[in-house]
Length: 102
Ligand SMILES: [Zn+2]
Image (cartoon, rainbow, N blue to C red):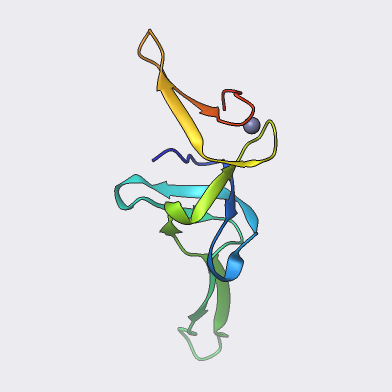
């Protein structure tokens, strides 16, 4: 998976199409990501005691990373990430459009 925590991504599908958000969590095994303000659900939490109130909590749900494109922090365009391995073995990611390392 090429998307990392902290990246800004743009949703390309579904009801949140066109929305941008920051990645808060990645799940590499499932190829899923969790993004602020995208794929939000409302969870109802029931009161545990009689004098407590039930709550509704909005939270983002993880979804498949293939549904988003990364927003390049340098050129602000939506991009597919390219990566390569340097001579010293380090892996870098770069923007295919502006060629900046990101
Ligand atoms: Zn770029």
